[in-house]
Image (tube, rainbow, N blue to C red):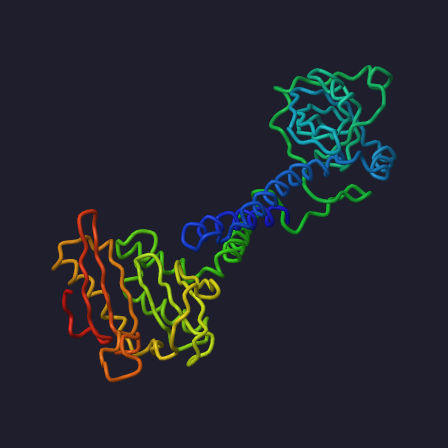
Length: 389
């Protein structure tokens, strides 16, 4: 189970990386500390849990020790290799010992033990030291260190054979040891035998962790994939289709308004001034970038008239990309600098009360510039009447 948690935490970290690269600022940032903390805890607890089968975690179970004594499942163990795992629980180091065991009633064997000991007693487990152990299972390598004195009979007469003459090490089985010496295996064993079915489960946990972070930013991730395939880089150019039309739809859906007073499109962001209620002057600023809509609050400069508003679906947004390309060709200025403003033109009818106000037909204005100059082009809402100003 801890391995599933570990892979899910890795998925969180992977998802956070994808969301940070593809999504808006701050996307998935919570998953970095969460995933890292959970992964470390799962790894540490997993390392500690491997010692539980040998009775090292929190000390041997007295009932198992008593059962081993009654069945005379005792032996003498010699420490061949001493390692510190780097893991501590309440100041007690978890050791990793390679030992050779000479049981009283079966053939000698080599195994690995992971006792959790007091730092004051760690020196007792130096290489070459002898210890009386209880064999917690009749035929396995699960053992627990006892306080019995190995220099007293019958242990003083026993000679533990050299490790090289015993054979390959036997790994302790994972799971809960019953008093009768049998082992209840965990549902998800860490042994290699079940890898064929555990691997898909781990991949599923990894995917679930990644999706949990990425899902809120799925539009940005899809756009980034499309942009990479199109050769536009990691983030989509919002002057290109279908990203521009998608951004306009998202702004309309999130704001709940089909009209706007002005829309400004750059390669990296779409800004819009949208009324709180269509037909009324009070307006808010909205922005769309990396698949996400940002409501920025009240517009700094409010529209003078509600008549400045225009329907978003009255503009041929799919015409902007070819218009910008044409403007760049005719001006010789870099297309990367393009800025497109869509708003109503000034009313030129001097006989009307709204003369000079932005209540005329909808106009598309394209601006390109470099360090030495700039150029301005205009078109109507449908992309026609294109000309340079």
